[in-house]
Picture 1 (tube, rainbow, N blue to C red):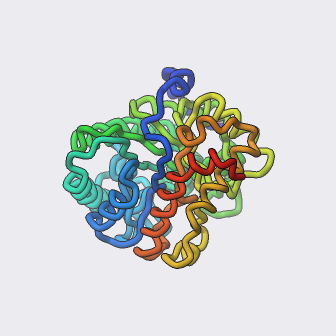
Picture 2 (picture 1 turned 180 degrees about the vertical axis):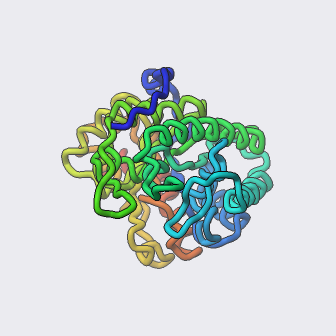
Picture 3 (picture 1 turned 90 degrees about the vertical axis):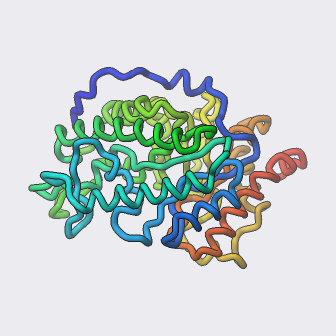
Amino acid sequence: MVNTKLGSVPDTSATSAAKPFPWPAAVATGVGSMPGTSPAEAIAVILGELPDFPHLPELPARGPGSDLTGRTLALLVDMPVETGPRGWRFALRPGRDQRHAAGLLAEDLDAVQQAAEGYAGPFKVQLAGPWTLAATVELNRSQNPALADPGAVADLIASLAEAAAAHVAEIRTRIPAATVVLQLDEPALPAVLAGAVPTASGLNRVGAVDTTVTGDGLRAVLTAAAAFSVVHCCAPDYPFGLIKDSGAGAVSIDISQLGRGAEDDLAELAEAGLGILAGALDTKDAKRGSAAASPAPKELASSVIELWHRAGLPPARLAEQVVITPACGLAGFSAASARAALASCRDAARILPELLTEGSP
């Protein structure tokens, strides 16, 4: 078990449930990544299709440093990183790879500041969560994931907490009237909990990390950011209880990954007052998101309503508590299909109240 020695951090789980949601009712947003290489074009699409809950896009097509991991690593404090043969790794000193990633982020923020001038409403930004970073970034010498070194994990969590706070503050400076929502992406968290993260050789696995430790790590980052928070994971076995106890204000899930057993966990979170970002639009096959084949908004809205009913939840707060999203990022889509996907999510959210009134399944 990893012992991070985080120290005590405030337990915000009780206050998160009491907070009003920062988004309006019957709304949609994106998960993060978008196709293309132009930040100005990407944010224009997002503001056009998701005017009530836009987000800061990642553009992985620009290369290393422009994806979610690279963007997050660019923000780390006193933890140099560089690219290696297999991805990102810790470095002995700051170098051009991290500076390049920071430069790409600065371009994105400039584009957003210009396009979103005067915007007042929720605005979401995404960072890789501490456990996904720990499972992804390599140690400099052993090439094992940082997860294998308790000291490195503790340093990473502390650095990311400071970085998240600074990033949220930067967004507030650039879009002063916006309400910043921080999303931590944790696709590797189920593997961390299950002891399924491979070592450098691929022959062994890093030992499972205790839920108390993982929860403390998440809470440290979320508390430092001081913003309404979402934890996104589109992998199976979403750790609902852990996320609830970490103090997150909402969960972001791929609803197609939920088995019948997970519906009770989802219901418990909803009853506790957490928001649900419901990934209703399938992103596994980019062709399904083409402008011609994008799912009808009614189909997406009905799938969310059906899940809500299966979980045994009352419909009264569905449109207020649930945000409709794609299941995951849209980097693999064409520009036209990404626009169509976001438009389908937006229209699905807008017809939710009407379908609820009609009693649609």
